[in-house]
Length: 291
Image (cartoon, rainbow, N blue to C red):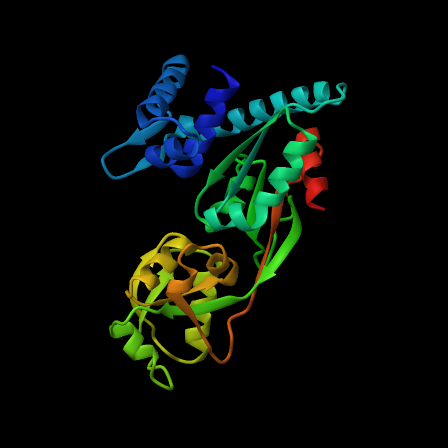
C-alpha cells in the first residue's frame, strides 16, 4: 500500500467511474483495476461493487476513504515540512480545470510558476467545470479553476481571476435552427435548447426561462461548455456558455451571440483551494503567483 495507490483510490471513490479515473490519472483502465484489486487483497475486503452499469463504494470502501484522506494528508504534511527546509521547491501540484480554463486561466500562471519553480511537477486534470469544487473538497486536486457558486463552503479559499458574461449562442451555418433564431422575437417555445447536464450555467438558464414562464424545448443535455458549443456549431440548437469559452475556441467563428433581455448573470471565475492545503509550500507558491 503506497501513497500513489491511495490517491488513485480516492480519485475513483470520487468519480465512481473506472474509465473516467483512468483518463484523468493517465493510466489504462486495466492498470486502475489492478491497483484497486491489490488494495482489496491487502485489506481482505472489497472496496467497490462493480457491475456493467455502475460502481459503488462498499461499507469498507466508504470507511477506507477517511483513512486514505488522512494518510495522504499526513504524508503531504511531512513532505511539506521537509520542503520548508530547502531553498528550491520540488514535488507535485495537482490542478483541475476545464479545457477552456486551461487556455484562458492557467496558461500564463503555468509559465510563470515553471520559471520560478522548475523542479515542481505540475499535473493537470481536465473535465467538466461543474465538478471542479468537488475535486478540491475530496482532495483529488490541490487547486481547481471554479465558477464561484452563490455560497462557497467555509473550508475553501477562493481567488477571483476573471469575470466573463454568460451568453446564449446560435449557429452560423444555414439550418433550421438559424431560420428559427432569425425571427424577431425568437420563438423560444419551439427553439431547440442544449443544456449542460449540471452546474451553474444550467441553473441560470433554467431560471431565465422560469422568469419568462417559458418551458424550454430541450434538445440535449451534455457535459461541459465545450460540448454545448460544438453542438450549437453543428446546428443542433442554441445554448448558453461563458464568453471565455467562445474566445478560446477554434470554432468561435462558427457561432454567434444572441442578444436577449434580460441578459444572463455573468460568471465569476477563479481559483479554489482547501484551507488545509493552503500552507503547503508548493500550493502556497502557486497561489501567491495567482495573487
